[in-house]
Image (tube, rainbow, N blue to C red; front, side, top):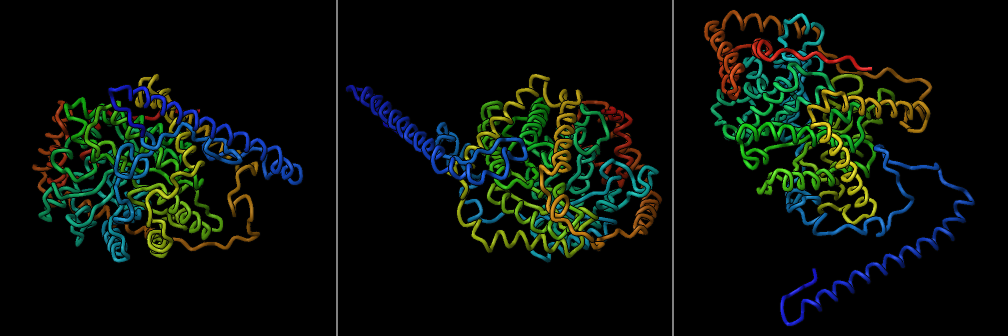
Length: 581
């Protein structure tokens, strides 16, 4: 910084000094430019004439053209204080905590859950015994769709890709012997997120844990379901209301619970680029924030508890730069667009899972290497918690062996290789800094396009997100089929004979046991109490009240997930996806 004191003509001297420094920098860059030209016309030209390069064109997975060499010329506009700063300070490019991993490493939070609540409780306790401090819950498709296990639409899917949860009784079993005041839990649940969070809070009530001490995260990002996954129930506007109700309720009643984990992960899994992952997720986040503020909640009241999940894909340097760009851009959005004043509102705290779509069914052991490299990228990018997609996950639910390898991989990265000893070690790399700024610039351009459409909901309704992601997914498959993109073991270095791998299978008899348990619950509960709770929920939905108190009452009355979501469907309607070409 150049001092520029007032008075006695020193102001003019300060300006002269500043001008001299600017000229000096320009001259230095010009000298560098001249030297680079001499290198290109000399040693480089001779090397290219002799053997050339592997390809005519290099680019990242997001289509950012990669230059042969990066120098200070590529980052001449970078201002350290404005664009980087220090860890724990705005704009948080270098991390959200002053000590980052020197204080403590990221939380290991492997994604788990299958079959019945009893089976999931056993798997959770296994993971905790392996040194995993937090839990992440996978729910089966009927639960994600708000269906009970005995619904005819649930046939063949109960407990297959996650745990089946029909009522509070199931949630009590999942967390039996797991103290909710000492373990935080992430839940990958969206359309019925308010109901599952209500069940989780009700378990805490029964354990005697005050709600203000309950910590965890619900994904609750239903807007991306219309784009990437399809586990929606209601139309977008009432879905947005439900998400906002949960955020507003947690801000006052469960302040340590992250009421939404905004997800770029699934859009990336569906085929989006890193730029689209940033832009679409942030556009969705703006819609949620606007909806909560419309309820009269100040942004600094709830924004500190916003959390995120992004996909750590396979392009190593692009993924490191992505997390740095995410933090910087989000800090600027919160400060400049929403007027946030609490630094915590400007921090982007993110979980990551390594790219499930990068896993291969062929030579599945190679996936251990892929996940390890992606874990290293996420650590260098500065994430707060991490799950590794297991090596056998392209085939089925991971085995205990695969989960253990994933936990140990994270522990090796955290404790053996020195990556946690210094903060943001990639800072100052000409390539990383250029890539960080370029990802941010392109994401801003994409967000401006969405803004002109009227925002995220309108862009989703118009099919814009969906088409953009489909186009990128198609391009990926084309490049793979043409050999432009190499996936080891799939289109290159293939084995002539692939051994049939062993993988985990969910016992099909578990579904019948779950349905029997549900039938018994309905027989034994107080029917009058449950009916009154459902009537109260319908009345709250028809009014404009926050729905969380009515949902919690229904949960405590042992109303089932299908009954609660059915009551809301009776008011909000059910969303039917438009056919796309």
